[in-house]
Length: 167
Image 1 (cartoon, rainbow, N blue to C red):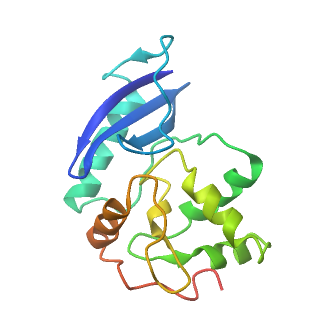
Image 2 (cartoon, rainbow, N blue to C red):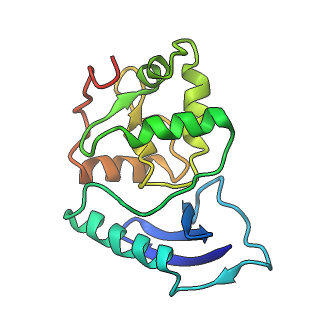
């Protein structure tokens, strides 16, 4: 595992790569951020870490809307399915956990979708900040609700939920 840190306008993030894929991107206060292990190597020159750093800078500058960093978020099969749905939410839009559950063919799994969303190991690039409550409220974000709001404001998505995205 290779890792480094990237500074963003919303704070420092831990970037993790393994076998040429991004496997983690966490804000420092992320409640699910893994503990560094002695076997890991700090490597600011790792190609995946550098590409992530560069694309995040573009995103925060308002010039990037999509990411093409190779990713491999690790989790359960259900979490993987939820994270795949998250990557389909376009820049500048939001959807609800309920709509995501219906998209997965499990309309009663809203809470499970929310829990899987909260365990997303690749913040921003797998855009869990674009999932909101059924009433349009900000709910849960491992990096903190203030960051979630800031990301939605950056994308000008606050209050612009696309109701038919996953209808």
